[in-house]
Structure formats: structure tokens, C-alpha cells
Length: 219
Image (cartoon, rainbow, N blue to C red; front, side, top):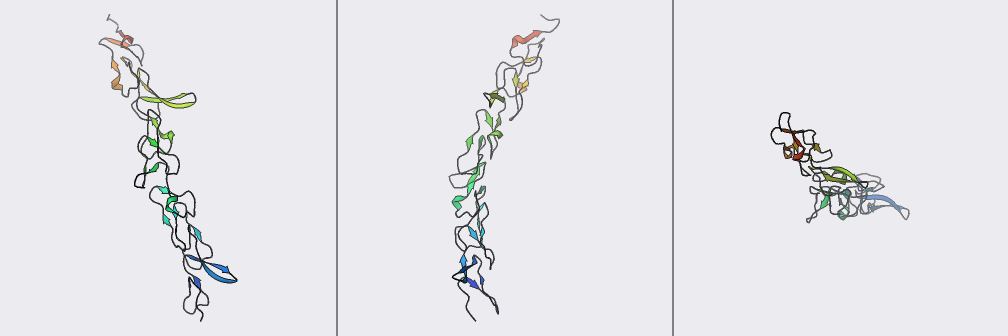
């Protein structure tokens, strides 16, 4: 009986040698040799002829490996066959903290790409939840509504006589007939001020007490 070459084995009464897991068969100088898989690749079973790439989100820094390592939570590699944990980058909506862990962007921040860069502040007068991935998800604060200025969407304060109680897209609501509101950027119908007794406004969204006129029968 002949001995198997390096990095291979045979079973009892076998007529051939099989490469160990982590190695693949290759022809060297006319004979079959077992070659270790390169970093970033693995051979999970014996007798394979081709090493497999570690999938995106995995890496392998050792030759002759049989398993890929998984990137940390909320991170991924941008390509297959990655060779180092340093190639694991934080997902969109996440950034790397001082401990090297990928954590969700804080409220009022966003991050749209896979990378380890810092999250970006939402535009002025907007709000976002933790882990936001796009500036488009930064909605207008309560008291503010969308407006387009020079082809750019901005959040502007509700006009006097109007309010908006919810966060996100949507129009400001008018103070009802019989009430007025002198200031901008208000967030509740309770901010609307009732006209003096025995007076009313002729229109909603009134902006001053001068809009209140006496009811019929009163002067």
C-alpha cells in the first residue's frame, strides 16, 4: 500500500486518496496534489476540486479553511471572498461606535450607504426614527410642513392661523371658525385662541383678534 500525499486521506481498502476538507485537488507536475484554499475561500467537504468563495457578509483570513466567519451584527461585506473582518462595514442606517460595534443611527440622523462613516443630521425642522436610511425619511416636525423652494423640498413653519400636530408629510390645518392664531409653527388646535364672547370670525385660519366681529344683535 502507498501512503497518501500531504493533506489527504483514504479509507480502508480504498484505491485513491481524498483531499482533506479545506484543500482541493490540483495537478502539479503531472500528479494530483492537495492545494489549500486561499484566504476568502473554503472547501467544506473532502474531494472538492474548486474552493468556494465566502458569501457577502462573511470573511475568512486563514488558508485551508472549512468555514467562513460571519460579520458582526448589522454589518456586511461589499463583495464575496472577503479576507478580513475589517472588510465588514456597517449597514445603511447604522454607524460604528467607539467600541467598534455597528449601532443604529440616532433619532434625527440617517445614513444611506454601507460604510463606517458617521450618520448625517436630518435637515432643519425635520425628524427621523433610529436607524433611518434615507434623507427622504426625515419628516417635517409637528408645526412644520413641506414646501418646495428653488426645486428643493424644505420644512417651513405653519403660517399664522394654522397648526400641524403630527410628524411627517401633510398640510397644516386651519384654526376653526371663531378662533384665530397670531404666531407661526404651532402644533395643536388648542393653540388657536377663541374670539371674545359674542363674536366670531367669518373665515377659518384667522390670524388676529381683529378678524373677530360681533354676532348679530351685538355691537
